[in-house]
Every structure is written in structure tokens, then in C-alpha cells.
Image (cartoon, rainbow, N blue to C red; front, side, top):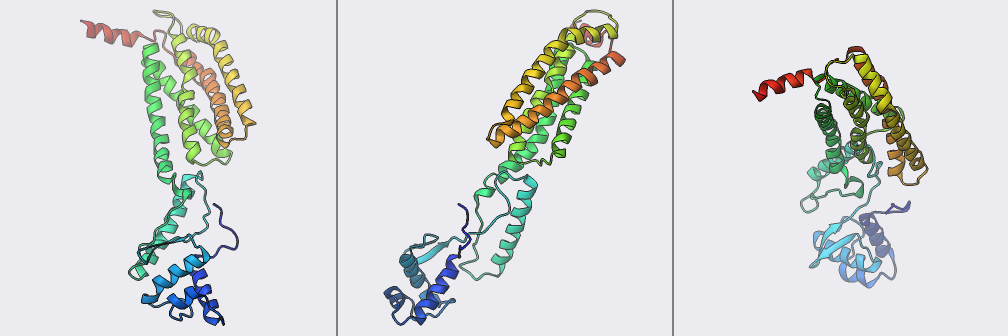
Length: 305
């Protein structure tokens, strides 16, 4: 829960209680029976445990835990400048700064209180976020490899596979650049959405690549490109339009995940459409193979003998 503006750590509250009781004309029985006249912190080793335990019972302090007459745990709350879905770089900076400070404090603290550690819901996703950051980069490479395999299987052309990889790389770079331009940084939600982006980015070029190889034998590259554009283009545009409308609907939702998903989906669809109609088709029309499956057929024929 959020720390209130008047929060005071248990040790300071205990110190204030000791000062009040020592100056009072009618101190409480808890103070008289357990604190041996202590005026303030620090308290003698023999008196500290019974005195603090008595204080926790008087004020109903839940941030101090005891076992068998000894204080075992004291929770002290602090403010943090990050939240759980902050960009990974911000979480890492905040975590390292806090841990460095605690390490220094542990080195100078006396035995018995030198085991201090930090725990916060803000960092529960820190390791997960870091792994997803690595996964986002790995997913890009995996998606490119898988897309290349699918394109090659459907087109049986090494050249078209290369064109598809170039087009998909354009989608990834262009969409990511647009998101950075909008002020996005790679956080927990962005890592999930980035993996989704990669899967969507390779869809349209696979369809164009398959359509380009529909005619067997040697057929002029311009005719192949025109055939792919006229026969597969309308379907791809229709798919892009319906996906774009789905993104528009999600923009107006109140859930952050869906809002960000809508933005990244919009960017992906826009650049996937440009990549398929401009980058991929332009490469096919300018330097595409007239016999896209020739090399594959030749290798297969040699292996069959």
C-alpha cells in the first residue's frame, strides 16, 4: 500500500515513546516493568528486547515481529521512484542504487542487525522483466529464422527467402523506431507486445512470396510480381484493414495493456503493409528470379539420384 505522508519508522516511534514515558509523571506499566528507566534510543542490550516488545503491544505495532522474547524482524518502509511496469533500465538503476546503499549499511552495522535486505512489489517483476528483455531480442532472431523457413518451404526459392527476411527486418526496425519516437521504453508490457509484433510482421510477405511462385518454369519477373500483386494484394489489404479497425477499438479501452497493444498493432500493420507492397514487391519486380524454384529443383534432382 502507499506510504502515508505522516509515516514514521518503528525505531523512531519507539524512541519518541521512550522520551514521552521517561518525562511522564505517570508512565505506563509496560515502560516501568520492561524498560529499566531508558530515556531514549540507544537502549542497553539487556533491556532492548523486552522494552520494544512491550511497546509493540501497547501501540499495536505490526512492523516489528518477535519470537521467544527476542525481536527478530523489523520492517521499515521507504519510497521508490519506480513501479512494477517501469522500463527495465529504470528498475535496474533504482535496484542497484538501493542495493549498493544497503551493502554499505550492512558493512558498518553491528552484529545482529547487519542482515538488512530490501523487498518490494515494485521489483517482483524485475528478474522477469530482464529475462523478457533478453527474450525480446531472441524472439526477433527466432521469428526471422522461422519466417525464413516458412517462406522457403512455401516458395522453394532462396532469393525470395532473402527478400522476405529483408522486408521483415524493415518492419521490426521501422515499428520499433516509431514506438521509440512516441517515448516508449522497453518494459514488462512492451516486452510481451514486442514478441507479438514479430509474429504479425512476417504474415503478408509470406503470402506474396507464395503467390510469386505460382507459375512453374521460366516466367518474366514483372509478370510474376503483377500476378502476386493483383491476386493476393486485395486480400492482404482487407486483412490489414480489419486488423487496423480492431486496433482502433482497443485504443479507447481503459486497460493499459490493450491500449499499448492497439498502438503496437497499428504500427505493425502499417509497416507490414508497406513492407509487403513496397519493399518485397519492389525487390521482386526489379531483381526477382524468373525461375524462383530453379536452384531448389536442381539441388533436389541431384539429391534424388
